[in-house]
Amino acid sequence: MKAPLRSLSFSVASAVAVALLSACGAGSSTPPEGIATAEFSCDAPGSVTSTTTVSVAALPFATTGALYMGIDNGTFKKYGLDLKVQPVADLAAALASVQGGTSDFAFASTISLLTARANGASFKMVAPFAGIAPGYYDRMKAGEPGWTTEVSSLVTKKGSGLDRPRDLAGHTVAVIDVKGQSELSTRTVIDNDGGDSRSVKLLNMPLADGLNAFLAGKVDAIYTSDPFTSKALAGGGQIISWVGVEALHQGINSSMVASESYIAKNRETVARFNCAMREANVNANADHDGVRRAIAKAQNVPFSTFEHANIAYFYKCANTEYLENFRDLMLKYKLLAKKVDVKDLLIPEDYCTEPDLSSYRPNS
Picture 1 (cartoon, rainbow, N blue to C red):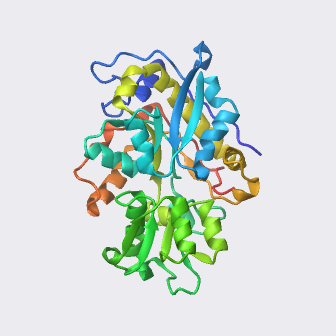
Picture 2 (picture 1 turned 180 degrees about the vertical axis):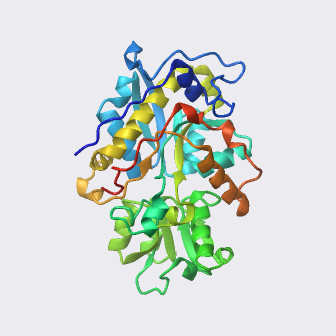
Picture 3 (picture 1 turned 120 degrees about the vertical axis):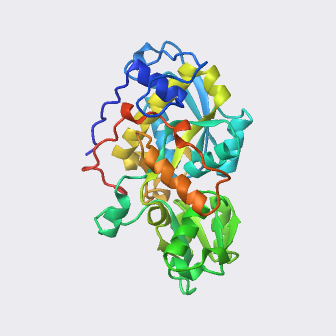
């Protein structure tokens, strides 16, 4: 049975802090100096009297189904938004679309956002998106039903002798973002398994190109996710690591971002988008098949293409601890130019509580 939608109550002050991504620490409702107050509240979506068209650059994988589901079921329309998804090949293209003004918002991995901020880019997180559910790693280790697989995996060929992460030392692996999350996760699981990740050759490839290279025998392993995982397995592959959970354990892997200039000029729109995204995320957690149907419809492919796809956990709230864990692991692997203050990216925590996960089942 589909779980009921939990309340998304925010005060006007919290909506302001959420929308404008206050640089103040958790507990403060004061927006950054020089930015006017947004009047929209998530409690009153009916106050919207007009529709604003906004665009989001996103990758063509199962996780994006949460956006399409929010469009199909009217969540974004409820908040006065006509959302257009613009598919892009990789994370770099997504951020470039925001920087160049082609898209209003973009899907960004937590690591790509931290990297961009460390390099002086003016991106801000406007809403949390997908990640690894709190407590996932411990429940996976315990073998709890439904918690033994996840979205991201490392795949090698059966019979190749590459049967666990440490075996990848000295081999070639296709990842979707060198210097990003896929490299970080891949290196972490190899090293944690007793291998030497420094000897691994990483090639940057979009998911589709990585799959083709793997099937053609041009790379030894791929970092991938559905629907590409299923195709790799059908082509003789085997999963040797649930790489995201094994490396990162839990936390927000991705978010929706915008440029600081867009946020400053479109405060009410950003506030509405934040409210809509959070509601869409809660709905997606309650209806994984709805996410699968929505992405299949958007890509004009049979439902069977995504029928068995693992679906990420969609965060309602951001969390400084998770972001700091990502940042510190990046510093360890020298993937971050300098230490970033994550509070400069983060929605104040005390305005949001993550829903109870006792009845949540991943991969349902």
